[in-house]
Amino acid sequence: MDKLVSEIKSKFEQASRVALFTHVSCDCDGIGSMLGLYSFLTENGKNVSLFCDSDIPARLSFLNGIENINKDENPSQNSSLKEELKIELDVNFDNFDLLVSLDTSTASRLGKYQEIFENFENTINIDHHISNSNYAKINYVKPYSSCGEVVYELLKEAGCKIEPNVATCLFAAISSDTNCFTNANISSRTHFCAGELLDLGADHNLVNLSLHKNKSKNQLRLIAYMAKNLKFYKGITYFYSSLKMLKKLGVKSNDVSTFMHIICNTAESKINIVIKERGNGEYRLSLRSVGDYDVNRVTKIFGGGGHKNAGGCVLKGNFKKEFKKLVSECLAEIKRVDLKP
Ligand SMILES: [Mn+2]
Image (cartoon, rainbow, N blue to C red; front, side, top):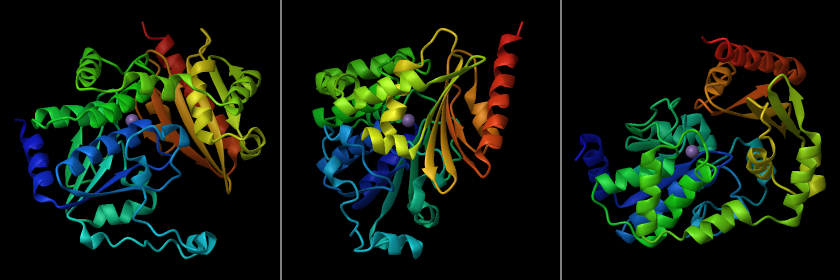
């Protein structure tokens, strides 16, 4: 057994109370990985709590155990007052033996749990982002398609028995982060993992329906709106998602990310950008690229991170000016690749 794997295995064995975390603006990879590990640990007699400093997307409600996320937190009576006081956590983390983060490239992506995680003595970071800053005491970071693939390999390497519930969560995590096995970041190992997870009882019909097929009427209206309002500029396709638009169409900002990959696949498109207005002069940008165009090179310049074909960053201040800068960095990246002999 790999040394790191056996170290993690014994950490799991020694701990009785474990807290699992995933990143803010959570997605199916983070949630699926977290719930997969959750089911595994609880089935093995551990007392496990789940935390995410974001709303949990309703479309993921098919995942077993999702109702347990943030259950240990007592929501304050007055949440705006709570924010003003810079959030006093209701959870006493001294009672935990081990904290584990999933799919989270930097500690700051843990939101309000950042400090707790950074100051805790017993932490594990399980992730697949090449930009991961190795912020935990033990860092298990592999450049795979998804965190789900990393968790599956870890459990398999450690000789753990994987139940159908766990398999479904991990299959969902992989299927989601690879856009149903179509992204450039997949490998033969990704398909082997997925195949083995099916053999272990993963419910692929449930995952496919929930993640890739079923849409609400409002979501279909959002797709139409997005298709109509996409902007095209020299190989860059972008969409601006305002808070007003989300409210008007009755959709979540997560929906915008989900549909971007469906509608922006024009043959001319080299880099796709979704800009999400977050309020208070903040804008979250998600960049996706095809082939050799490396968006991680662009997001890094703006304090963000990610992988070659998927990255994100936050723009603040004069948005028009900052976005113009980002677009010119994207054009430089397109030029770099196109001019390669
Ligand atoms: Mn991921």
